[in-house]
Image (tube, rainbow, N blue to C red; front, side, top):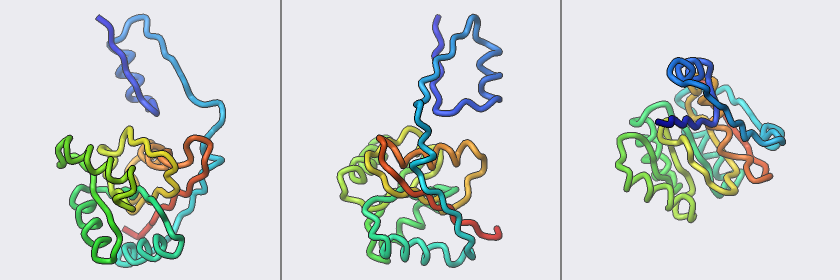
Amino acid sequence: RQNLLFSATMPKSIADLAGSFLKDAVMIDVSPEEIMVGRIEQKIMFIRKADKRRLLVQLIEEEQVERALIFTRTKHGANRLVKQLGQSGIDAVAIHGNKGQGARTKALAGFKNGHYQVLVATDIAARGIDVKALGHVVNFDVPAVPDDYIHRVGRTGRAKLTGEALTFVSRE
């Protein structure tokens, strides 16, 4: 029997778990020699929770964002944000665990081909998303753990391109 584990990050707890049932384990690390962080401009914006949506719409319009991946904490929050963005004239679609595989595939394809300007996602649904030339990632909600931040921000600045990662921080 052969077990294979793949991860963009390997938290200590997962490494310990893997070590508890693997024998003669071999780790293959294919981390790029060039660290992407240098190509990603990271910004933090302190804002009242009630003003997040307004600021997001303003940023998308003023910076003429062609394609943005926005992360929310909850599935309900993702659906609500898609509806609010639509009311502001921004084509958006949500991807999260309550969507079937067909709906997730269709949403991602629509985002990749430019039908949707914004893809709103939760952390679980966003793992493994690879979109070429994704210029903006927005943490609409602060991630619960540091590894989620790394996964989120790592969606931009790929293929030697630059990217921008914004994190909205409110008192909550």
